[in-house]
Image (cartoon, rainbow, N blue to C red; front, side, top):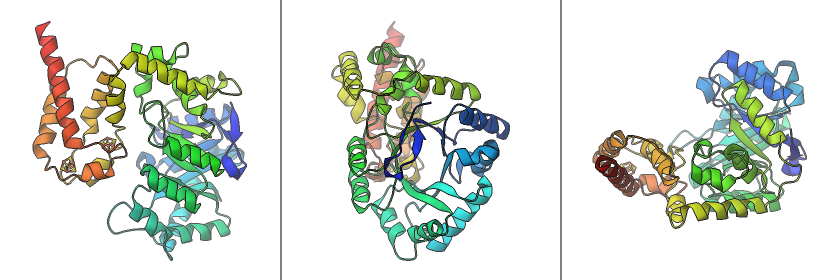
Length: 376
Ligand code: SF4
Ligand code: SF4
């Protein structure tokens, strides 16, 4: 395993960390964690609601007596839109509950989970609210470092960095999704560690397509995707949600195969090759790249889930063969017929996507594909 310094925390963190949100069941979860510890992963990213509320329990069981050798990070939601922001007492209680589920006496990292809107950030800082309870837990020795996970706008994350209330920042970053590239640079300047979510862009970078194979050549797509983010000097560790022991072994072997020092120039080389493959299509691809985070669904009065058609559209833009498009056309149509064009989705989308407009674009693309294949 490769390690690096985790910002000003001074901890040595493995370049690959285990995201504990995709455990399929208890037995497999325990095996995954045991294997990850054996192969040198020392940062474990869980959350109070992962795996139906069981992830913390299963992680604790998997770590067993090796708990002292690793760092555990967990988190709880700080609000969402509307009432119900946690008070200092709520936060202190939630930390106690996480400690109980994990079977540990302290948390190495405790994160404010998904601080995406200015009002969430403002609330958690207020007297008597979330941060006060977490600081109290820190003084009691229950929490060592306080961090934040976020899909917020770069401007809000920059504000957080300037105000300096959090140590590590957990943000999304991959070859395909880079809204926080400048945030990562600034975090480094300020000595903050950065944990990456989605180094494989929700699995898209692992889908075989000549476009990506060519962009990452001679590396394999998955190795290239990890290398792409880890060569950024602002990135401490890439969190990957692994579902099997085999996946842990394969990912650890990839990280082991990386050179000790990575060249940031790798990003430029891969970017240029991707541009050569996609040409003018690259701008459109980047502009409308939906990460399927589903934040729009949380605010949509109609409960529309556009990621279910935007994701296959992403694949099409990368020239992946997705087969029959008829069902996708029907799904897009059904969503459009419910959409009132209230605009709430665009307001919250980290990519700034206008969902109904993009649904139209996606539907047209699929319809053109269907008609082309009918003529063949
Ligand atoms: S514009 Fe349409 S998709 Fe977006 S939030 Fe409103 S109803 Fe939902
Ligand atoms: S449209 Fe935007 S908010 Fe909705 S799932 Fe995609 S990236 Fe997330």
